[in-house]
Image 1 (tube, one colour):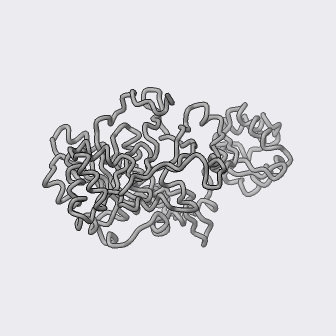
Image 2 (spheres, one colour):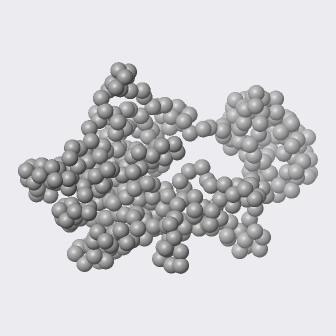
Image 3 (cartoon, one colour):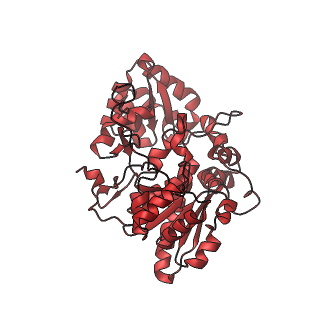
Length: 420
């Protein structure tokens, strides 16, 4: 048995059932975190499936990453019978999680006000663009709140706002939804009552740039965008070196400065009184950094990395995401878990960046095929095989649960593996 899919391990949220009505990234991230921590997460999808399953380009990885450790049930929520199925399912749940418009959930009778009357112990996690207030009628996306919340300004060059290179607000917003859900579970142990948890993209983004807000509060000076900021460290830069390779090098303390100068034979710089403290080196960056670029330009990046590592100095190669599949640290520490994609291909996926009791939190379930667990779930709710069959025939449930693709493609060639 693959150890990353060992169901025997006792996890913190084992026995907690989550029913989620989510799509894209924010809501699914919340369910992924709860699922990784041991909760049973049931993803309720429309008959056509979560649209994220079909995204191309930079969205192609959304579904498999954020929907692992979940079960899939596809049904027609516009039908009375479909809503009745969901009602029975929610009656068994500890947590409901959603990231649709409030009006959508209200029309379906799946809003917090309605469900809390029926199930006072229910915890309801709502993921939105904005917390209630003047902006809450707006449609938000990660990029929208990055622009209006200062993050794009801080990331790009002056006059050229640039979104961060990941769905940072969607992912963190989902994480905060999960944190709120776990806090509500703890409080329910004391009060016996559930509550609504609200998480939002915009407020998450403001939290991300709060350090720059507080910089202004302390100094009275507006923060410069990151590419133009005054670094708090004398050496904290990307250097272009031999064969046009790049490497990030940092020297952030007076002790590190002495070690750096000795390791590279820069006795003249170590003796220069203009460079005797970190703050002085910051003030000297306008001539110090060009001088170091010149001195290091003909050194291979691998040699610089070896010297920095041997002397305990901070450094980093400039790595693109696809090469992380081969990262020796991730592979040696179990940071990448084997995963079967819904189309049957094998890959690996990064796990939550934490350990509990010395172990990473692995996969118990691959990202599900559409309605993969529908029959199993309905039978567990007390429906008969005939009732399930009838609902499939009537279009309330998916006519036939999605099956994995064959190992051979229609052209007869083996389905190619991912970069893993």
